[in-house]
Length: 115
Image (spheres, rainbow, N blue to C red):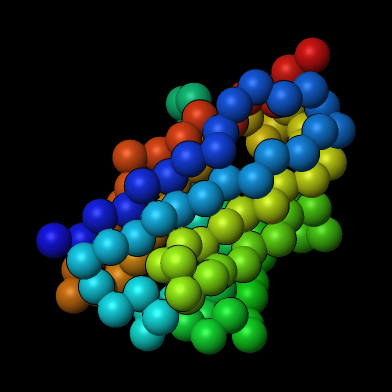
């Protein structure tokens, strides 16, 4: 079965950085694009970034452009989200997503940006 396991969240001060990881299993990871989403308290889950199966094409939501970088290591079945210049508005639970037959989500990792 498909499993997505996020890690790397935590508490960070404004302006700081974090790198999230999502380890995938149960499908041919290198053949599928991957996605990061986030959900802040009281808000709907929103798209953050996506990366093509070969890692050559990326796309970002406007609020994170220039601050976040999505990447992947197909040898390790892992997708990453490097987050720099973090702002309090980035506080959310971050999820990775895969579309393989149906939509699969990880359990999420909490990112809190606060002084």
